[in-house]
Image (cartoon, rainbow, N blue to C red; front, side, top):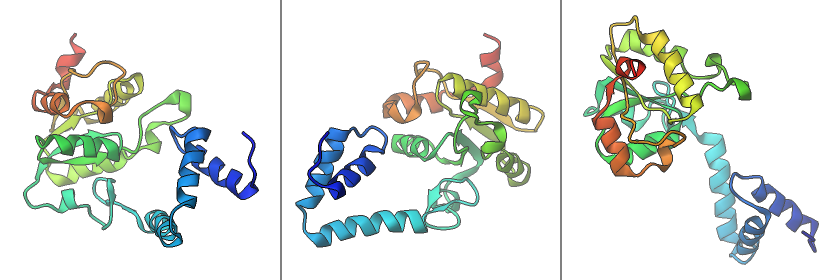
Length: 205
């Protein structure tokens, strides 16, 4: 793609570096911003900088938050004895949108993937174990994507938690293998959590 301006080219390349954004889409976004009032563009830029500089991660569950402890963990009406283990914030949002879950979460920050150089020590697993030991939780729900990485992570967590006095559940597999939670429709995802089963039952198959 030929550009009439180096500044334009640099801006397009930055947008194109985002996931799912090709150069044509990046060019369209940049040209759109150029046609906006300067105040709007400055507000847009400030919002991104503020996000990057001021965002926090909940000290309890590692979800993205504005405070030290997120609104879900601090909510009085949430069931603190029930912890849903998810990959990232997108999965928290997907489950919350179902309106059928009233426990709390633990965000791993990824999945075990030896091919990508991601091991257990790269995830929020030790803090999960400490949390279970000290929080009085009586059930964890393994709500990870139905992928090879998701299943590997689930099995690792099961081995780490099976000797603890806690029920270990897995979401029902109404979700096709290879499916990621954030793309599952709300009804299917809600039913998968509501009809969860003991993880040991999935090993017997």
